[in-house]
Image (cartoon, rainbow, N blue to C red):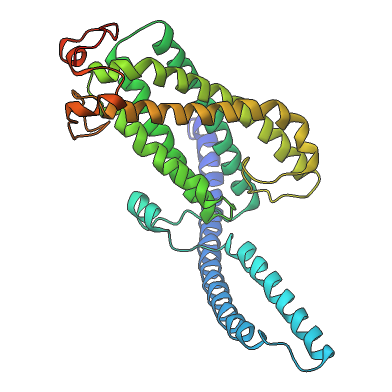
Length: 337
């Protein structure tokens, strides 16, 4: 009939009615979500306050039980209390991994007061696993760039790109590791400090002007970067395998990194890796000695080596004499002092 609605309009009205019902349900779900968030925030504050009080009281008790009692039974009780206090500290550490806390100085400067605490084990492990993949992928990229700069091209601009990648890589590592520490990873302080130093040194190489001293050190540095990236790939695969086995055995924490944990069975792969590691450390020492000898050259003016020009009487510590340095001649001068 003429007054009957078209089929398309009828379907549209039915879809709209169903959409309205879903919208009402969405609003109710969102209201419950906000309510639960408020409850979670209160619970987090209560847990943090309780942990602070517990720690304060445990500190007071530990001061009292330093001296053992007069009898053997008292001494035994005191030892049990000390052991429980030590275990309680580890439990608090695990609890705080799931509670929001203030960022450290470095994260506060970089990110501000953003809460970086991940509230579930799955998200924590996913972030840590992504950190490991980032290290491996970045190392492979640095390996390729070092290989190209070392054997195929010799442009300062491409060298600067490689050095910029190194600065970016180590800066990113420090940020990610700080977030992992906030989420309960037991990263050693020396490991993080090593990345701070690497960031600074990469910045020094990035700003080194394209002069004679840079060209003298360039091939040695690129070869070292190539070797270091290769060893880091080997080390990453070895440590990832060790950590996977430890987790499967239930002997390590899920948020532990690939620089932690050691068991006797790990010697099987480590005996292959150790010569590469020791050779890399000796190469670092050789780089340092090379830069030290460069710093003694009379024409050394770049601050990346040293900003103080050395007098001519330090030739005994140099690899070139003053005349050779001034006239850019090779070392086969026979002596012009």
